[in-house]
Image 1 (spheres, rainbow, N blue to C red):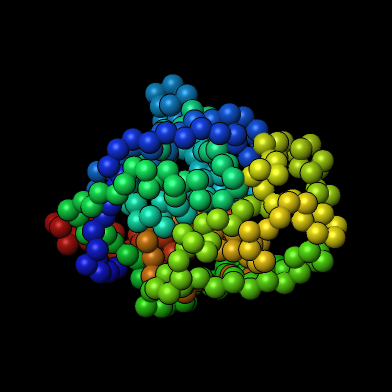
Image 2 (cartoon, helix red, strand yellow; image 1 turned 45 degrees about the vertical axis):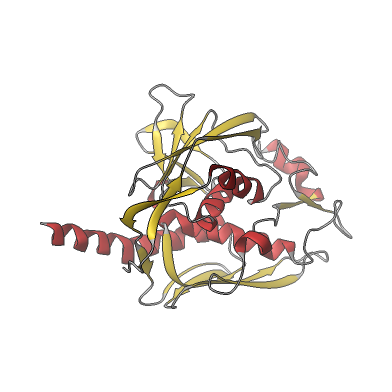
Length: 293
């Protein structure tokens, strides 16, 4: 654990945003509220009795089917789906603490990237709190694997992601993209990268109740020989995967390490986040607690 001289942050005022949910296709509204230090990022389901709160934490993840979903083990209805884009935006803007009130079970998709949420946070502006930010240092290699997909977190003086993407599809093929927090601009070069899907999968996804809110306004649609709508970057697919890794790693707040990912999706991202939580975060929190007493 390092304190690094930086302080925790929150937003200065409440901000609202409404739109369509990517998978359910339902209209949803969110309100982001300031929060006290050490509160973390908390989602509050205001449409449910008692407005249950779910903290963004890898141990609260209940599903990784096409997105990252968190929930409460004590309340089957208390779920929030597709949190990775807003989590990456909060991370990029340095927001440690916020309450996100939501009136449905899935966040709005915006344009399929993290950019709408970053613009939203900019409207609220950021306020520094008088409590140091804790950064969790990767001190030894941690890895997870499933088939030919794998991820490893290595010790590194900073935060870095190296992502290798491969699809057996002529439009995507193999792509590699790297993000180093000390060198690259996440907001300019990764936040605008949109989620993507294949034209040939649409009917199957709809039958499974997925991508019902998807459109050319909020996703890159990939045909057999090209994209149906234009790309923002030549390697937008790999950039969006980096965005997803950032959002899922942010379930632990701020970590310091080098994340190497090969063909990984939300399942492996969360598995790695859980291992980091168990190996470094929980141990450090226990040590801090013992020091207090």
